[in-house]
Amino acid sequence: MKPRIRSWRPLDMLRWYNSFLTKPKESITSDELEAFFEGAKAYYNKSTEEAEKKWSLSRYRWRFDEKTSELVFKHQKGSLPTLIAKAQIISSFFVEPQEWHWSWAAPHLPKKSTADARRVRNFGRRMKQTPLYKSPVQLKTQKHLRHFMTALALSLSKKAETAYTGQGKDQEVVFLLHSIRVTENEKTS
Image (cartoon, rainbow, N blue to C red; front, top):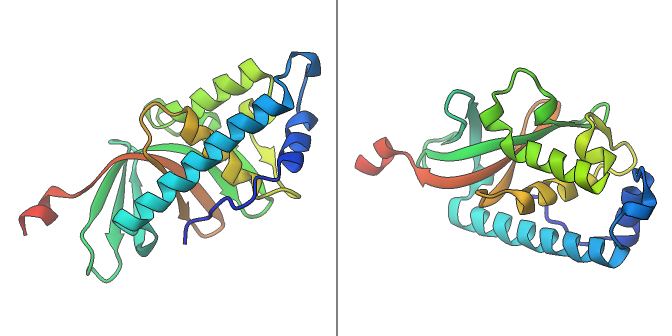
């Protein structure tokens, strides 16, 4: 089941946001911030629900192809068609030590796979929001904020249609997806 942001907790988010401000006098107002995050939350919830309803992504195993920047979804029992989507890697969230690592900070990833994460970094610099342009981000006490950062990335993306969180052994990998489709060899069989 995909994580759903149920409660925005504006005061918690505002405290977290303000704790990273470097120049509070240049920040946007709390009402503007809350409206922005509300829009991002609504888009995240709607897009992930629609993608799950249409594609049942939670029923698949995934593999990322760095050469093509595509995420391949295969059903373990083979009863569902193989899917493929164009993907951007946003981050990895490591369960221990509860850290969010932005993909733009990973030198082994191709730049074409991290464009949306770099867009978040640039937004963070403009807004003077340290957790958006520094990596890793410690989330020990507020690990639910990883969903908020994913919602922000989704709302800033120019192409993404939905977000997907792939489960790994000790980490979650966050992707933004567009152009989800059944693979060609599945269509012809």
